[in-house]
Length: 431
Image (cartoon, rainbow, N blue to C red; front, side, top):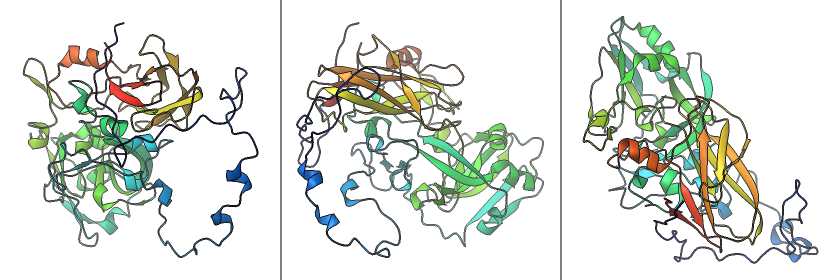
């Protein structure tokens, strides 16, 4: 396999420099368990533990100092970020989830990816209504209080924009998994199955599609087949146990599990039932996959199996010396679960099965880990997801062979990070 590197230098922090590589920890580093190895620790005594720090000498903050809990000031860097040339203004905007700073599978509400077409609407829940109209027996209008009287369910789902990783179709562009893969989040939604609300109105026999509409100034609309609407869609009002955030559609949004995020209409105010799709802007000029021959794939709703190594990565370099090293990342599929992820440290010459950890839920993120002994030589890191249908995540070149490079949607190709001998990572492609 010929290796060629195409990419840009890693993004820098603050003053334009990555954090300097830490000195090697005292004592040799190695595996804990398995093959015999030395300990990953400092030799005692160590002033940082023997000296009494200020926070042990004085009382802490009173319990009423922060009525709504916030992260530690030492985690102030864990925030959503934008890419200037992708965001024309702060109204039609994209903010990326800091995947490299997270672990487990649940995305904290405050850093969930967000995409706006007309800014984040501030909706008064007391004045908000949801209307069901069109091909129904009885057009109905529900208040928020009415919605809360329906039976509710809790489900953990990922929401991924169809344009996630879209800038990488033509080559390595963005340096950091927050920017390449951060148009995604994974939370527990609480809501009412959409089928229960539609049943109240009574869908006519010729009702084959629904068109949800948002209450923001863009009045976002998408056509959704009635089969999906009656299957697993939710009308959600909470995420991770608390009310939806304003930027996530407060007080009501649609959840369309496993399908592209543009369909998850926020600030949901109306659902029209019809006998054919509406062919609106978001499913004609946008969110179609332009092929090499000039034709476009339409209604490509499902998000294919995908994965990315979040650490090490360009925003999370290796900061220790050679020795025991942990690789971790996330994988997901819009068609089911991800029972297996493979990892390679040599650009695909040799693959090894990663360790899956945490719950495995339908159409949800899955966390994987791979521990190995790093000898200090450069690495080419990749991950490859296998979903419960038997689908295997393809390479970028396989996708290009199938669809060309004209699209910006549905790129689920394997991502490569090059890690140099200093532990600094960069977005590259190999061929």
